[in-house]
Length: 506
Ligand SMILES: Cc1cc2nc3c(=O)[nH]c(=O)nc-3n(C[C@H](O)[C@H](O)[C@H](O)COP(=O)(O)OP(=O)(O)OC[C@H]3O[C@@H](n4cnc5c(N)ncnc54)[C@H](O)[C@@H]3O)c2cc1C
Image 1 (cartoon, rainbow, N blue to C red):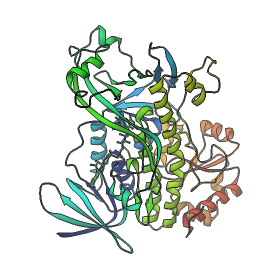
Image 2 (image 1 turned 120 degrees about the vertical axis):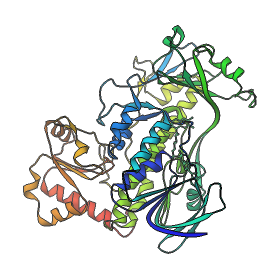
Image 3 (image 1 turned 120 degrees about the horizontal axis):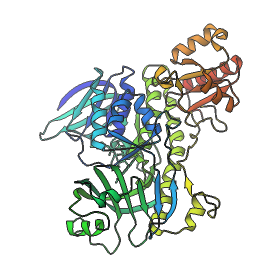
Image 4 (image 1 turned 30 degrees about the vertical axis):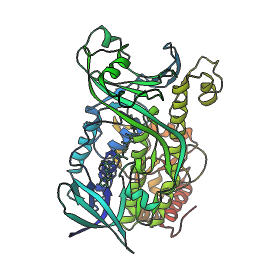
């Protein structure tokens, strides 16, 4: 066995969530090791959709423009239809750029996205990546943890030591199980068949296919039909108790399902695979210096296309905290609030996805009234993604928009985050700079807070929230608002107290 190097941080799992955490923290110049058991990027995609907030996170790792090139913005929303293809419900979409500074919805081919995220890591000398090494053993000491890996195709084992460990190692996470094996199950647990197709040629059949996702709410055969891009489509089909699991992935059965829309003349099946869709959340996300993010912490049925999005939000919520802790600017207790904040947020999405699953499985119209709107007789049959407040944590607890994702603004045609990549932002329109005392400036410097003077668009937003100052966190959630220098000083001191607090704040 080889004894190996020491790192500030070890990330286990280089799936999309691990890759985003690594890119975020690499920018802060701390030493990072990433361990991934597979030698190559997984060729079969799971996720196909992400939202505007996630594109904003990609912007904050400097990769949005590359990711934009391999993704398709979607302006059509998602339709829930009954057995006769009559529209029951629509998840809203917007033809214009959304409040995050990007289109609200994007479709992509997962291996392309993962490739860009990995190329992004090549920019940093402080990141080491070990592909083809499987974590097999975790040993905890007072101020460090050692991880032992098995190198693929050899009997060699290597041990690494890290001050902090993030488990982005997916649904069977060893790190998560080391923290706790208790899990809350929200009750959705079903086998679905996923068929990915490459469109071979355009003809009258392919031209008739919709350019949006359709949720087919029909208990006889519930299914989701997805438009990824003009060359790629996906069908997700519920497996029924009467189905024979051996026959269901055979071509004869697959084409019998696809026949109303496509034949082998128009498309080839890239792959067909059975997945079990879960709705679970782990009870504990942190123990001492071990912490988890992504599927190792929670799983959602994919009906809203939000499981990966939630994992990437975890990454963005976690990385600035660890960045401050590792550089000695904050107490490690701030990690306790990471789970409380994120759990409330992600649960809202998982619960909604479970409700969508119930609607797709049963086709019962009354569920729409129950779950999606107050009065179904109303002509409006649309709903939007929720915009949850964080659970209690590092923010000035209060009413919305506090604790919610903030919009991104345009400043002379540039997006405002560009002025403060993954840093705190203080938006102000009260000539704040002239009032700041040396002690304030010291604090602003220590926490790398970037002050942005408001233009008209920002001022309008500040006024709509009865404020003239807003403190925004690096993950772009609203910490708090103020109206003048005195209020701002209070905000900054609260932030300092929360970040430096020796014990759990809540
Ligand atoms: C059919 C389907 C469709 C979906 N569609 C969407 C969608 O459209 N939008 C969306 O947001 N979400 C979607 N999801 C959910 C999304 O795919 C997952 O939430 C997301 O991939 C989780 O990413 P992750 O990085 O946390 O985990 P993973 O992608 O599972 O990555 C974990 C990584 O850890 C590695 N690993 C595991 N154990 C070890 C070990 N012991 N040592 C070293 N490495 C290890 C694995 O090899 C892997 O690379 C979908 C899911 C399914 C099943």
